[in-house]
Image: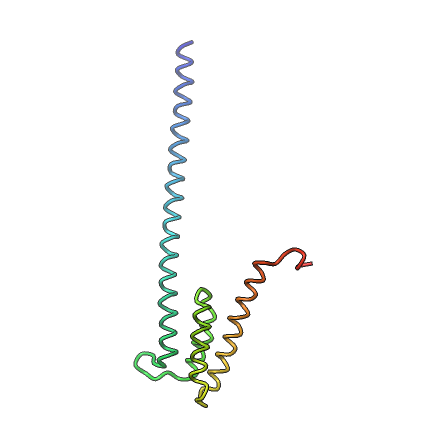
Length: 141
């Protein structure tokens, strides 16, 4: 009888050890995956930060790789700024300031039009985000 109890006991212990080992492996895998995604997210944020500042520098400075920038390139940069949602407030301030600064120059007409469109898009996207945040079921139906 004692031998049977010992056999069951060791079978249960072996099962518990196997379960703990399996759970430990899962925790280790989950932590490694979480750490990897955190590292990638930080790298992507840094890259977006660098790209945003490079675009702003090229827009304001009008220079790309030691060459004067064409108006169409500046228009493309203004349009591209729509994709940097985390910088929307500062982008609105920068574009508004540049708009006022470049308004007297006649050759900037197309650029100013694109700045207006981008400003409208950014302001509208901020408003729609706020509306979505406070939208109720009553508003939907």
